[in-house]
Image (cartoon, rainbow, N blue to C red; front, side):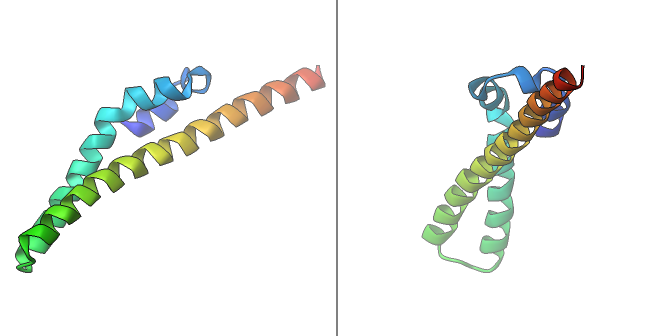
Length: 93
C-alpha cells in the first residue's frame, strides 16, 4: 500500500521509478475500486451503457493517476525532509 511504502525508511533514498514501479498494482487496484463504485451508481440510475463504460474507464485512469500523484507528493516531502534534515545536522556540527 502507498502508506506502507511512505513509512519505509528506504523510500527517501529510492528513485522515482522504483517508487512508482513498486506501487503500480496498488494504484490500479484503487482505480478499479473507483470504477466499481461508478458502475454501481450509474447502473442503478439506468444510465446508458456507453456513459457507464466511459465513466468506468475514466475512474480507473483517474483513480490510478491520483494514487501515483499522491505517492509522488509524499515521496518528495520525505526526500526534502531527509535532505533538509541532513544539511541542518551537518551545519550544526
